[in-house]
Length: 352
Ligand SMILES: Cc1ncc(COP(=O)(O)O)c(C=O)c1O
Image 1 (cartoon, rainbow, N blue to C red):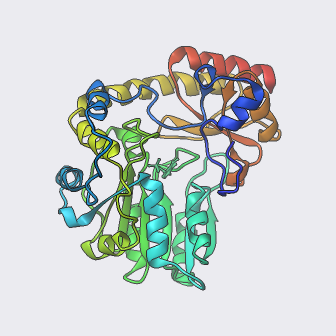
Image 2: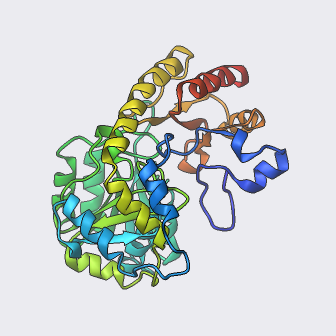
Protein backbone atom coordinates (compact mmCIF):
# COMPACT_ATOMS: atom_id res chain seq x y z
CA UNK A 1 0.00 0.00 0.00
CA UNK A 2 1.39 3.40 -0.94
CA UNK A 3 -0.35 5.64 1.56
CA UNK A 4 2.16 8.42 1.56
CA UNK A 5 3.03 12.08 1.40
CA UNK A 6 2.81 11.80 -2.37
CA UNK A 7 -0.93 11.26 -2.13
CA UNK A 8 -2.97 8.37 -3.51
CA UNK A 9 -2.56 4.71 -2.81
CA UNK A 10 -1.54 2.48 -5.69
CA UNK A 11 -0.88 -1.20 -6.18
CA UNK A 12 2.62 -2.62 -6.21
CA UNK A 13 4.95 -3.43 -3.35
CA UNK A 14 5.99 -0.77 -0.87
CA UNK A 15 9.70 -1.41 -0.17
CA UNK A 16 9.38 0.05 3.34
CA UNK A 17 6.51 -2.29 4.25
CA UNK A 18 8.41 -5.28 2.85
CA UNK A 19 11.47 -4.39 4.90
CA UNK A 20 9.40 -4.05 8.06
CA UNK A 21 7.84 -7.51 7.63
CA UNK A 22 11.09 -9.12 6.48
CA UNK A 23 9.63 -10.19 3.12
CA UNK A 24 11.97 -10.07 0.13
CA UNK A 25 10.55 -8.57 -3.09
CA UNK A 26 11.34 -11.85 -4.89
CA UNK A 27 9.12 -13.96 -2.59
CA UNK A 28 6.11 -11.60 -2.76
CA UNK A 29 3.23 -12.75 -4.98
CA UNK A 30 1.87 -9.49 -6.27
CA UNK A 31 -1.76 -9.54 -7.40
CA UNK A 32 -2.05 -5.79 -6.86
CA UNK A 33 -0.46 -4.56 -10.10
CA UNK A 34 -2.15 -4.97 -13.45
CA UNK A 35 0.91 -5.29 -15.70
CA UNK A 36 1.62 -8.17 -18.07
CA UNK A 37 3.01 -10.83 -15.67
CA UNK A 38 5.10 -12.47 -18.42
CA UNK A 39 7.57 -9.58 -18.51
CA UNK A 40 9.21 -7.82 -21.46
CA UNK A 41 10.13 -9.58 -24.72
CA UNK A 42 13.78 -10.76 -25.04
CA UNK A 43 14.39 -8.17 -27.78
CA UNK A 44 13.29 -5.42 -25.40
CA UNK A 45 15.72 -6.58 -22.73
CA UNK A 46 18.52 -6.56 -25.33
CA UNK A 47 17.59 -3.05 -26.50
CA UNK A 48 17.76 -1.75 -22.93
CA UNK A 49 21.21 -3.26 -22.43
CA UNK A 50 22.50 -1.60 -25.60
CA UNK A 51 21.71 1.94 -24.38
CA UNK A 52 24.59 4.19 -23.34
CA UNK A 53 23.28 5.75 -20.13
CA UNK A 54 25.80 8.59 -20.24
CA UNK A 55 24.03 10.27 -23.17
CA UNK A 56 20.98 12.52 -22.94
CA UNK A 57 17.80 11.04 -24.36
CA UNK A 58 16.14 12.53 -27.45
CA UNK A 59 13.96 15.19 -25.81
CA UNK A 60 11.31 14.79 -28.49
CA UNK A 61 11.31 10.97 -28.30
CA UNK A 62 11.38 11.49 -32.07
CA UNK A 63 11.73 7.94 -33.40
CA UNK A 64 9.29 6.49 -30.92
CA UNK A 65 6.83 9.27 -31.58
CA UNK A 66 6.97 8.59 -35.32
CA UNK A 67 6.61 4.86 -34.84
CA UNK A 68 3.63 5.31 -32.51
CA UNK A 69 2.03 7.77 -34.92
CA UNK A 70 2.34 5.26 -37.74
CA UNK A 71 0.98 2.39 -35.63
CA UNK A 72 -2.05 4.50 -34.70
CA UNK A 73 -2.63 5.95 -38.19
CA UNK A 74 -1.91 9.43 -36.89
CA UNK A 75 0.55 12.23 -37.62
CA UNK A 76 3.60 12.64 -35.30
CA UNK A 77 2.11 15.97 -34.15
CA UNK A 78 -0.84 14.03 -32.73
CA UNK A 79 1.38 12.02 -30.37
CA UNK A 80 3.12 12.99 -27.15
CA UNK A 81 5.34 10.40 -25.44
CA UNK A 82 5.37 10.63 -21.65
CA UNK A 83 7.08 9.28 -18.57
CA UNK A 84 4.25 6.80 -18.11
CA UNK A 85 0.59 7.59 -18.77
CA UNK A 86 0.65 9.07 -15.26
CA UNK A 87 2.76 12.02 -16.46
CA UNK A 88 0.27 12.71 -19.26
CA UNK A 89 -2.60 12.85 -16.76
CA UNK A 90 -0.71 15.55 -14.87
CA UNK A 91 0.14 17.41 -18.09
CA UNK A 92 -3.47 17.60 -19.24
CA UNK A 93 -4.52 18.78 -15.78
CA UNK A 94 -1.87 21.51 -15.88
CA UNK A 95 -2.79 22.52 -19.43
CA UNK A 96 -6.55 22.66 -18.95
CA UNK A 97 -7.36 23.01 -15.25
CA UNK A 98 -6.65 25.54 -12.52
CA UNK A 99 -8.35 27.22 -9.57
CA UNK A 100 -12.11 27.48 -10.07
CA UNK A 101 -12.09 24.99 -12.94
CA UNK A 102 -13.89 21.69 -12.88
CA UNK A 103 -13.06 18.07 -13.71
CA UNK A 104 -15.57 15.26 -13.88
CA UNK A 105 -14.51 11.65 -13.29
CA UNK A 106 -16.41 8.51 -14.22
CA UNK A 107 -15.71 6.54 -11.04
CA UNK A 108 -14.61 4.52 -9.30
CA UNK A 109 -11.36 5.16 -11.17
CA UNK A 110 -7.59 5.60 -11.08
CA UNK A 111 -6.77 8.06 -8.29
CA UNK A 112 -4.28 10.19 -10.24
CA UNK A 113 -7.12 11.97 -12.11
CA UNK A 114 -8.38 13.51 -8.89
CA UNK A 115 -4.92 14.07 -7.51
CA UNK A 116 -3.61 15.87 -10.62
CA UNK A 117 -6.76 18.02 -10.86
CA UNK A 118 -6.71 18.98 -7.20
CA UNK A 119 -2.99 19.76 -7.28
CA UNK A 120 -3.70 22.63 -9.70
CA UNK A 121 -6.64 23.85 -7.61
CA UNK A 122 -9.51 22.43 -9.68
CA UNK A 123 -12.73 21.00 -8.26
CA UNK A 124 -13.45 17.33 -8.93
CA UNK A 125 -16.84 15.70 -9.18
CA UNK A 126 -17.44 11.99 -9.63
CA UNK A 127 -20.28 10.08 -11.26
CA UNK A 128 -19.95 6.51 -10.02
CA UNK A 129 -20.74 2.99 -11.15
CA UNK A 130 -21.73 0.68 -8.32
CA UNK A 131 -21.65 -2.99 -7.34
CA UNK A 132 -22.33 -5.68 -8.25
CA UNK A 133 -22.04 -5.09 -12.01
CA UNK A 134 -20.33 -1.67 -11.99
CA UNK A 135 -22.11 -0.71 -15.21
CA UNK A 136 -21.05 2.88 -16.09
CA UNK A 137 -24.00 5.26 -15.49
CA UNK A 138 -23.69 6.92 -18.90
CA UNK A 139 -27.01 8.76 -18.92
CA UNK A 140 -26.16 10.32 -15.58
CA UNK A 141 -22.66 11.17 -16.78
CA UNK A 142 -23.98 12.86 -19.94
CA UNK A 143 -26.44 14.82 -17.78
CA UNK A 144 -23.64 16.01 -15.49
CA UNK A 145 -21.44 17.01 -18.44
CA UNK A 146 -24.30 19.12 -19.82
CA UNK A 147 -25.08 20.62 -16.41
CA UNK A 148 -21.56 21.27 -15.06
CA UNK A 149 -19.71 21.99 -18.33
CA UNK A 150 -16.39 20.78 -16.89
CA UNK A 151 -13.07 21.56 -18.59
CA UNK A 152 -12.08 17.87 -18.43
CA UNK A 153 -13.96 14.57 -18.23
CA UNK A 154 -11.88 11.52 -17.26
CA UNK A 155 -13.08 8.14 -18.43
CA UNK A 156 -11.02 4.99 -17.92
CA UNK A 157 -11.81 2.34 -20.54
CA UNK A 158 -11.44 -0.52 -19.66
CA UNK A 159 -11.83 0.71 -16.14
CA UNK A 160 -9.37 0.47 -13.28
CA UNK A 161 -10.30 -1.02 -10.76
CA UNK A 162 -13.40 -2.84 -12.05
CA UNK A 163 -12.13 -4.05 -15.45
CA UNK A 164 -15.50 -3.09 -16.98
CA UNK A 165 -15.57 -1.52 -20.47
CA UNK A 166 -17.86 1.08 -21.98
CA UNK A 167 -20.29 -0.02 -24.70
CA UNK A 168 -18.90 0.40 -28.25
CA UNK A 169 -20.50 3.67 -29.30
CA UNK A 170 -20.41 5.33 -25.85
CA UNK A 171 -17.22 7.29 -26.50
CA UNK A 172 -18.54 8.94 -29.67
CA UNK A 173 -21.73 9.86 -27.80
CA UNK A 174 -19.82 11.25 -24.83
CA UNK A 175 -17.50 13.23 -27.14
CA UNK A 176 -20.58 14.75 -28.81
CA UNK A 177 -22.02 15.67 -25.41
CA UNK A 178 -18.72 17.29 -24.42
CA UNK A 179 -18.78 19.68 -27.40
CA UNK A 180 -15.86 21.99 -28.12
CA UNK A 181 -15.31 23.41 -24.61
CA UNK A 182 -14.77 20.14 -22.77
CA UNK A 183 -11.93 17.69 -23.35
CA UNK A 184 -12.86 14.03 -22.96
CA UNK A 185 -9.80 12.21 -21.61
CA UNK A 186 -10.05 8.51 -22.47
CA UNK A 187 -7.54 6.49 -20.50
CA UNK A 188 -6.87 3.30 -22.44
CA UNK A 189 -4.06 2.02 -20.24
CA UNK A 190 -5.60 -1.47 -20.37
CA UNK A 191 -6.90 -1.50 -23.94
CA UNK A 192 -4.70 -4.35 -25.19
CA UNK A 193 -5.66 -6.63 -22.30
CA UNK A 194 -9.26 -6.54 -23.50
CA UNK A 195 -8.90 -7.44 -27.14
CA UNK A 196 -5.20 -7.65 -28.02
CA UNK A 197 -5.51 -4.38 -29.96
CA UNK A 198 -2.60 -2.18 -28.95
CA UNK A 199 -3.42 0.70 -31.28
CA UNK A 200 -6.33 2.64 -32.77
CA UNK A 201 -6.62 5.96 -34.60
CA UNK A 202 -7.28 9.14 -32.61
CA UNK A 203 -10.84 9.92 -31.47
CA UNK A 204 -12.61 13.23 -32.35
CA UNK A 205 -10.54 16.41 -31.77
CA UNK A 206 -12.10 17.15 -28.37
CA UNK A 207 -10.71 13.81 -27.06
CA UNK A 208 -7.35 12.94 -25.61
CA UNK A 209 -6.53 9.23 -25.61
CA UNK A 210 -3.95 8.04 -23.08
CA UNK A 211 -2.12 4.74 -23.49
CA UNK A 212 0.31 3.23 -21.05
CA UNK A 213 3.18 1.11 -22.36
CA UNK A 214 4.09 0.02 -18.85
CA UNK A 215 1.17 -2.43 -18.55
CA UNK A 216 0.85 -4.44 -21.77
CA UNK A 217 4.60 -4.20 -22.55
CA UNK A 218 5.64 -4.84 -18.93
CA UNK A 219 7.80 -1.72 -18.51
CA UNK A 220 6.50 -0.38 -15.19
CA UNK A 221 9.97 0.31 -13.80
CA UNK A 222 11.05 2.26 -16.87
CA UNK A 223 7.88 4.41 -17.20
CA UNK A 224 6.44 4.93 -20.68
CA UNK A 225 3.12 6.06 -22.13
CA UNK A 226 1.72 8.30 -24.83
CA UNK A 227 -1.15 10.62 -25.57
CA UNK A 228 -3.04 10.82 -28.88
CA UNK A 229 -5.01 13.93 -29.68
CA UNK A 230 -5.39 16.93 -31.96
CA UNK A 231 -2.10 18.71 -32.80
CA UNK A 232 -3.28 21.80 -30.85
CA UNK A 233 -4.06 19.83 -27.71
CA UNK A 234 -0.82 17.83 -27.94
CA UNK A 235 1.18 21.06 -28.30
CA UNK A 236 -0.64 22.44 -25.27
CA UNK A 237 0.39 19.44 -23.16
CA UNK A 238 3.99 19.54 -24.43
CA UNK A 239 4.40 23.08 -23.04
CA UNK A 240 4.21 21.65 -19.52
CA UNK A 241 6.47 18.63 -20.00
CA UNK A 242 9.88 18.84 -18.34
CA UNK A 243 12.80 18.45 -20.76
CA UNK A 244 14.13 14.87 -21.15
CA UNK A 245 11.21 13.51 -19.23
CA UNK A 246 11.28 10.19 -21.13
CA UNK A 247 14.62 8.53 -20.49
CA UNK A 248 16.77 6.79 -23.10
CA UNK A 249 16.12 3.26 -21.78
CA UNK A 250 12.36 3.78 -21.96
CA UNK A 251 12.56 5.12 -25.51
CA UNK A 252 14.73 2.20 -26.65
CA UNK A 253 12.45 -0.30 -24.90
CA UNK A 254 9.34 1.25 -26.45
CA UNK A 255 10.79 1.08 -29.95
CA UNK A 256 11.90 -2.52 -29.47
CA UNK A 257 8.48 -3.47 -28.07
CA UNK A 258 6.84 -2.31 -31.29
CA UNK A 259 8.96 -4.91 -33.11
CA UNK A 260 7.88 -7.65 -30.70
CA UNK A 261 4.12 -7.49 -31.01
CA UNK A 262 3.83 -11.22 -31.69
CA UNK A 263 5.43 -11.98 -28.33
CA UNK A 264 3.13 -9.56 -26.53
CA UNK A 265 0.01 -10.82 -28.35
CA UNK A 266 0.86 -14.40 -27.38
CA UNK A 267 1.37 -13.45 -23.71
CA UNK A 268 -1.88 -11.49 -23.59
CA UNK A 269 -3.78 -14.39 -25.16
CA UNK A 270 -2.33 -16.73 -22.57
CA UNK A 271 -3.23 -14.28 -19.81
CA UNK A 272 -6.82 -14.08 -21.08
CA UNK A 273 -7.08 -17.90 -20.87
CA UNK A 274 -5.64 -17.91 -17.34
CA UNK A 275 -8.12 -15.21 -16.37
CA UNK A 276 -11.09 -17.39 -17.30
CA UNK A 277 -9.93 -20.14 -14.92
CA UNK A 278 -8.91 -17.71 -12.19
CA UNK A 279 -12.22 -15.84 -12.26
CA UNK A 280 -14.26 -19.03 -12.30
CA UNK A 281 -12.20 -20.25 -9.31
CA UNK A 282 -13.02 -17.02 -7.48
CA UNK A 283 -16.72 -17.42 -8.27
CA UNK A 284 -16.72 -21.02 -7.05
CA UNK A 285 -14.97 -19.91 -3.85
CA UNK A 286 -17.81 -17.45 -3.22
CA UNK A 287 -16.11 -14.29 -4.49
CA UNK A 288 -17.73 -13.48 -7.85
CA UNK A 289 -15.58 -10.83 -9.58
CA UNK A 290 -16.85 -7.70 -11.32
CA UNK A 291 -17.76 -8.43 -14.99
CA UNK A 292 -14.28 -7.50 -16.21
CA UNK A 293 -13.23 -7.75 -19.85
CA UNK A 294 -9.59 -7.66 -18.82
CA UNK A 295 -7.40 -9.81 -16.56
CA UNK A 296 -8.21 -7.93 -13.34
CA UNK A 297 -11.33 -7.04 -11.45
CA UNK A 298 -12.69 -6.43 -7.97
CA UNK A 299 -14.28 -8.81 -5.48
CA UNK A 300 -16.23 -8.08 -2.33
CA UNK A 301 -14.63 -9.59 0.76
CA UNK A 302 -17.57 -8.69 3.00
CA UNK A 303 -15.36 -7.08 5.64
CA UNK A 304 -12.75 -4.31 5.76
CA UNK A 305 -10.46 -4.80 2.77
CA UNK A 306 -7.59 -3.25 4.71
CA UNK A 307 -7.70 -6.16 7.13
CA UNK A 308 -7.88 -8.80 4.37
CA UNK A 309 -5.00 -7.19 2.53
CA UNK A 310 -2.93 -7.16 5.70
CA UNK A 311 -3.59 -10.83 6.46
CA UNK A 312 -2.69 -11.85 2.92
CA UNK A 313 0.41 -9.69 3.04
CA UNK A 314 1.62 -11.60 6.09
CA UNK A 315 1.51 -14.65 3.79
CA UNK A 316 3.64 -12.76 1.22
CA UNK A 317 0.64 -12.17 -1.06
CA UNK A 318 -0.28 -8.65 -2.08
CA UNK A 319 -3.72 -7.56 -3.25
CA UNK A 320 -5.07 -4.05 -3.83
CA UNK A 321 -7.23 -2.78 -0.99
CA UNK A 322 -9.91 -0.71 -2.77
CA UNK A 323 -10.68 1.64 0.12
CA UNK A 324 -9.10 4.57 -1.75
CA UNK A 325 -11.51 3.87 -4.65
CA UNK A 326 -14.40 4.33 -2.22
CA UNK A 327 -14.90 0.54 -2.04
CA UNK A 328 -13.79 -0.29 1.52
CA UNK A 329 -14.85 -3.94 1.43
CA UNK A 330 -13.49 -4.74 -2.04
CA UNK A 331 -10.07 -5.88 -3.18
CA UNK A 332 -8.68 -5.79 -6.72
CA UNK A 333 -6.96 -8.87 -8.08
CA UNK A 334 -4.92 -9.31 -11.23
CA UNK A 335 -4.47 -12.66 -12.94
CA UNK A 336 -1.03 -14.24 -12.70
CA UNK A 337 0.41 -17.62 -13.68
CA UNK A 338 -1.66 -20.70 -12.81
CA UNK A 339 0.26 -21.87 -9.72
CA UNK A 340 0.19 -18.36 -8.25
CA UNK A 341 -3.55 -18.05 -8.87
CA UNK A 342 -4.14 -21.30 -6.96
CA UNK A 343 -2.08 -20.03 -4.03
CA UNK A 344 -4.17 -16.86 -3.92
CA UNK A 345 -7.44 -18.82 -3.94
CA UNK A 346 -6.27 -21.00 -1.06
CA UNK A 347 -4.98 -18.07 0.97
CA UNK A 348 -8.13 -16.05 0.36
CA UNK A 349 -10.33 -18.87 1.60
CA UNK A 350 -8.12 -19.23 4.67
CA UNK A 351 -8.17 -15.56 5.67
CA UNK A 352 -11.74 -14.53 4.81
C1 LIG B 1 -5.97 3.58 -15.48
C2 LIG B 1 -4.54 3.90 -15.37
N1 LIG B 1 -4.03 4.89 -16.09
C3 LIG B 1 -2.73 5.20 -16.03
C4 LIG B 1 -1.88 4.51 -15.22
C5 LIG B 1 -0.45 4.92 -15.15
O1 LIG B 1 0.25 4.22 -16.11
P1 LIG B 1 1.81 4.38 -16.24
O2 LIG B 1 2.43 3.28 -15.46
O3 LIG B 1 2.03 4.27 -17.72
O4 LIG B 1 2.16 5.73 -15.72
C6 LIG B 1 -2.36 3.47 -14.44
C7 LIG B 1 -1.44 2.73 -13.56
O5 LIG B 1 -1.83 2.02 -12.67
C8 LIG B 1 -3.72 3.15 -14.52
O6 LIG B 1 -4.25 2.16 -13.79
